[in-house]
Length: 299
View (cartoon, rainbow, N blue to C red):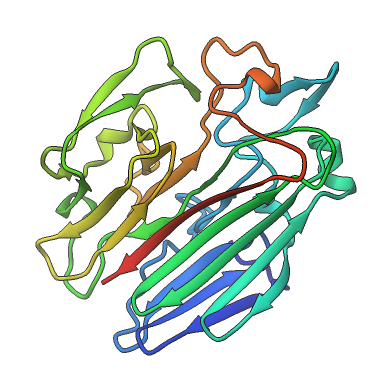
């Protein structure tokens, strides 16, 4: 979702050309330098009008878009406000950039905490690394979640194909604990599993009840999207994520899939509305820093 007056940052090496928007620190394009193949979803509003939003300071939805903290009620919509804020460029080279967002008068209306959020992108060969760094500069604890939501074009490459020509493989190949969504909320009372002992064939009906969610429990994991049509694909590698979501907007026949690394998750079905009790919330003590990262290989 590129705004008309948006400022964008370009990272480039011999393999890839990467575009990131200062609005939301959102990755908007990754193209192969030689073939010009576009890997990132291009935000067609008929399906989904974003590319790869940052989810902060919540992941998913709150009951009634509302939470309580320290005796006060606050309202915040799905996935939080960072995706709609203008970040500042703190550092930049030809192949790396650091974006920074700090609390301000607008965020205080939604979220009564001081914070500094740094998002670092680094391009090496055909790999793009993304690091989130949340710092608590205050004298009281900060409660937050954070995550990514990158969308990838399907099909990829010159050959004509469809969404259902692709599979998602997960390494380690095993059966993963999983959370289902009841509406937009986490059904914590009925955990289930997802079998990734072999690749999952993509089809739009898989997402009739929203995202497929793997409970990674911070296990290092790689998700790879490929097809027999050609040699192109993407691989998302996580070192310490709490969860990863796989999503495409059903029942729309959308030509993309999102692989979403999460350090946090939507409210549980039985949430009491208190931010400190929120399912999957992270507590950051005064003057401490939280780090999370993932990497994407484009091939």
